[in-house]
Amino acid sequence: MKALFIGGTGIISSAITRQLAEQGCELYLLNRGNRGDRLPENVRLLQADINDEARVAELIEHMSFDVVADFIAFHPDQLERDFRLFHGKTKQFMFISSASAYQKPLSDYRITESTPLANPYWEYSRNKIACEEYLIRQYREHRFPITIVRPSHTYDERSIPLGVHGSRGSWQVAKRMLENKPVIIHGDGTSLWTMTHNSDFAKGFIGLMGNLHAIGEAVQITSDESLTWNQIYEAIADALGVKLRAVHVPSAFLAACSKEDYTGGLIGDKANSVVFDNGKLKRLVPGFAATKRFDQGIKETVQYILDHPEYQTEDPEFDSWCDNVIDVLDGAIAAIKGN
Image (cartoon, rainbow, N blue to C red; front, side, top):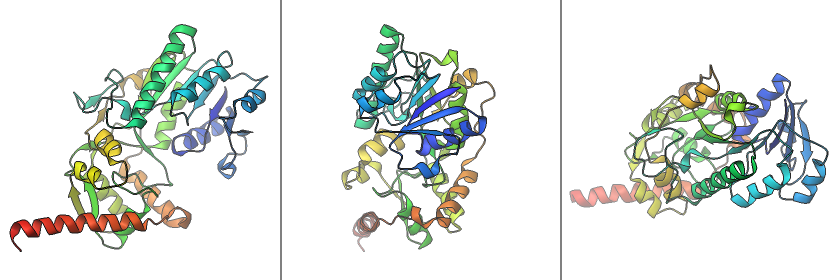
């Protein structure tokens, strides 16, 4: 198989790149080459900015592919560019959408690919919906061979997956745990969520590549494991070897008092209970199973970050904000009790 990935070094795509390289796929990555040290030796780099359409067209002028996958498209304009570049040059074009595009609030917590797409809370999700609608038109009107993939919360060894964190990543929450400071969990922590390790996601994605039954289809790829946010934070604390000190805060309160986009990220996504039905994926990719439990995967992630200080990015502003939120809540409780 001859494949081209636009991107290829991110959380989702890096595991796919590694697994395809091990399988002997003729794989090309089209990106700016800033993360070349992460590439397997037999992966070929086409170094360019995908937004430089003329340069990319020149690079691929005499090339064609079995699969082209865009991991970094977030707006329909970017897919219009992809259509111009790859129409007639690939047997399958794969777009990475998002499970956050599913309707909010959900009419049923069990999510399938037929769950309506509608998210009034998050522009990111609305743009992904618009991307899907554009590609479906190209499939219907021009036979552009699309496959839409919807991941949910996928993680790797470089970042701890959380519900509430700052703009600089998740390390500050882990640091608070290590310092025996309280950490914020949105809501009461009992809503259900799904965490998928990128190595499991890669197995499902690779099974869709070159799969004629996946053309024209939208497919979600997630783990079948359902966890509460309380369980997720407990597993992280356990991996760090500390006791969790949780403070539960309503999502609407967090959205109202933070500069972060918690309206989109929480109310439009993580504050909702979700359980994914992966029956369609398993029909298209017989034998697919996500095999890495979260308590296993998060131990690997935590150990990797502890061993690599470059991923321990501190966020003093977020840390101070957490202290302020917790102090205000404690003060409100004391005022109501008359203390």
